[in-house]
Length: 557
Image 1 (tube, helix red, strand yellow):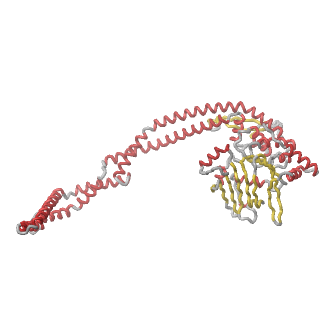
Image 2 (cartoon, rainbow, N blue to C red):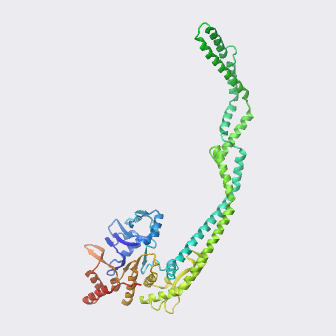
Image 3 (tube, rainbow, N blue to C red):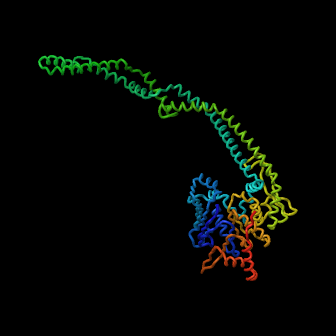
């Protein structure tokens, strides 16, 4: 991934800037205090650095920084990781943007989506490696040191295998822990499940029972009133004197007399016979209902008690009898599943043990490779840093045994350094910012092909060095520029001349306003800038600047 465009507006002394960057070595020069650090500060904002309203240009409402990044074929894994987080790319570049308002509000955007500053920092991790007097993005980090040694030892594939095996082992361990915890919780619940199953089973519920009980309760509650009505019905249907049934039978006799005198009345007789038959049927049903009907307070109490039981079970297990029965089946299934815990735990314990054995075997091989390469790597670094003004310094690699095998293997890797006659100490405790930058440059050159970060930023790597050392730095920067994008803020003309592209930072006064401008310089303008950096007599400086530009070259390893 490479930074192809940087836009800055109303940030510090920058009023408006829109600059494009190619690959290779990019030199940034200018007078002291011209504002070269603005580029570094802007890039740090794109990496998730905190910002405050003091960065907003005086008199402006807000400032913004925007970076455009082009992906390379080697970024396939990075793109896959971004997509897994919901960011879609289809050949377009990545645009990262920060906004800072004068009121103190800030916003961050990644691929047109607003994100938190913290999340932006996570998304942009390992995209740009910054090395300056005050910041070392990678060199002092253990994982970068470990990767550098593994790359030198030809052990990167083995290191990845160890990492993958550790992840698989941890996955098994996590599953096992979750299963054991679930088992404990399940065991605590088993007694409750058994009680609940027993409670429902003893109730002997059946589908449709509730409706029957509610109907029975209604009948039993109104038994006396129902009995009185049934008696009246029986009286009216039985043919007693003055009853409707007696009247219908009288009508039927009259129709029979009439049909002998009036033929159409024959059909009336049939209708009346049917009506009388229906009355008889109805009378039979009423009599049977009377026989069945009982005024029984004890039966009513039993029915009401059963309804209350069903209501209690529904409140606990489901809205209907069918739901209660289904929940009981679920509880029975849980009990059956809990019985298989021991088998599953045993299976997972075996799988975890197998993965741990594989992990330890791979880690042991990795340890041997690291131990075999450590001394050679130290010597190689010493040879590489000697021309960089660090001759006589000792460089060492400590392999610190871990109590347990981890994703990094069986040991931590720590780089140490010492001046002549001094004890070896971790890099961050002894090396200056400039020395750390030069060490990074040396290690990057030794690790060519194993560097995941393709954008490097060196600020003041040339602080306090001679022209000879600057030449050695320029040579190594050129080597890195073959497959990296390397930004170098420098005061050394030999380093600036070695760059593929050259940008000049100038502070300009326009009326009552001061602004910072960044422009590419080439041809005669570049010679002029190199001459300024060289100082001395004007013609001699121009001649030497021209010589530097002709001899910058590339060093191929």
